[in-house]
Image (cartoon, rainbow, N blue to C red; front, side, top):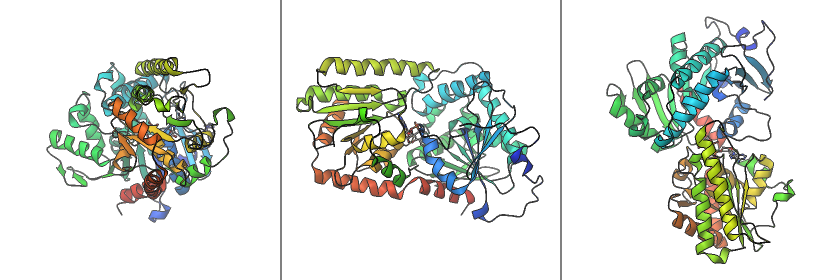
Length: 484
Ligand code: ADQ
């Protein structure tokens, strides 16, 4: 996003705040929404890679308000001047972060400790000295910069693992507004959570929110199990936690997509003709599609192995199927991400080396982000959506694949049991991504599924994805945050 520097002395938002809370009380419909996330989303960009931007963009555009977060530049000075710009009803406020703080807060504690741990990979946790301090420091400065912007009636909605400590810092500054938190990634069981030396401090911070939202019942249960084990002083009921100072509501809010928008995109003509195939199921060659950020949580090596196994053990598919995997590189400075890149490239090459022929390349692997208006028609043309993370908060691609299908001739979703989406999308073919042979058998079943069963499964999935869409996710979270 192009954020413009605010002219000196004219802090747009600070100026509009009547300090001391003298404003009249607003009705819920007039309350301003203040979204805080690691990075302010680019609300105008055609390529949106990342679930937060996709899920929340729809909600904040409807409600209006402020989106506050890191400005996305790596050469700033932590605590330096904020950048403000207006996108329709949304005021975006970007805070600078210095390269050293970016390294400790974002690459360090957030993505080398919390991300692997919360994705059940303690083996990949890298507790470097100073990263926790950097994480706390950045959260503190963000709280200090956010606080003067707030109005007394604001509803504050904080997102994801980067900002766990934010509410304790805001509370210390005197913030009494209701603050909700949504965790986009899984919450691990207590045994794993305690693998970070700072688990007590992180959970204490979470207990400063008024509402804690998780993607699944399993995540909410893991959080409550942690409290039972490590915080005997709090009282826990099904949807509430009572501390000495606060009642915190805990619930599951499965994130959804904008089904109408994605479905409309999928019906557009594919503008990148090099990726086009003939209509699915009508031609001898069917396409299996996978779309992910290149991340070790997404199960890409296991996926390539399962595709290899399919071709090996079900030779009827030789020359008749291709596998398109789109996986742009993210967080390239973190070592574990380079390792996964090398492994995936080798596996893609090895399947092709083993099976390719002059007129058939079984694996097409694209390591760059693809615009949504190309992605959606590609999904529509694909006979199988192959979504098999080893662990995933939700996985919006699974929902997008369903929304993109032609209901008269839909493809089949093959979905990992370890994606949060599997808790709801029970009409997909649910697989264990570690069980390579079984995944290959399910791929075979998906590729040969009769039209009647495909339609039935798709209709049930589409009903669900449509009912629990992005708007419903945001509305139900905000309703709970208001205390309705
Ligand atoms: P992500 O890990 O980024 O998000 P996911 O939900 O799969 O994962 O995807 C988010 C969005 O990014 C989707 O709209 C998707 O189309 C887009 N995207 C993914 N790969 C892409 C690619 N290769 N090219 C272009 N676009 C791509 C986190 C959690 C998830 C959770 C979301 C939302 O890790 O579990 O579902 O937040 O809460």
